[in-house]
Amino acid sequence: MREQSHLGAAGVREAIYRETGVFRTVRSVEAHASRIHVSLKVRPQCPECGVIGVRLVRTTGMCPLCTERLHVEEERAYNELLQAEAAGVEGAELEALQREYARLRQANSRLRRRYGLRGKRERG
Image 1 (cartoon, rainbow, N blue to C red):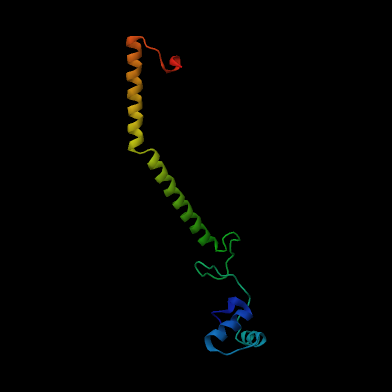
Image 2: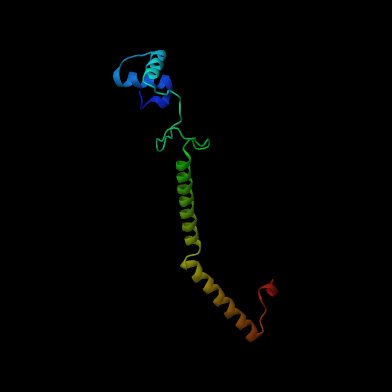
């Protein structure tokens, strides 16, 4: 009864029935708890870590510690996603293309100046 007291009188009654098969009334559970000085106050329990009697965060339904762990894991996963995307965009291939583009622009500029040719804008 002490281990299940945070569930309240009805929860303790169901736990006793599951464990022993004995059906007790809510009133008999309350009377027995009063005799052995056990509080039957319903207290919240974190579904993640099982801690009893802490305030649960409304958005997650977990204790503050588990909620922060969840937030850290979500941010870590998001960070890995962003790093993977950044690696795909800013990889060696992108740098090689940028160098090739700069080399070709410079070569075209030199050819235009040497031979007096028109630029891209002037060609229309």
